[in-house]
Image (cartoon, rainbow, N blue to C red):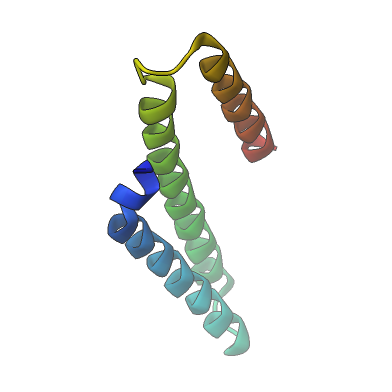
Length: 91
């Protein structure tokens, strides 16, 4: 069973909070909200997305790279995949 399946409810709760924060930004912009509040919401979303990424990444590393059943080739492939994702995320 995939780690995202095991943590589905927790991860979905995070995604719903992020969606709510994005809706909040949209509402502020539609109502000509204060730019400081918009910036604060953007920062909150960034933190929430970083938290989601961290949680999913940790589960992936523990399940795939920490698996005693994985072959060296499987681990190498997983490492390359994680490195590619991190490079993309850090841009």
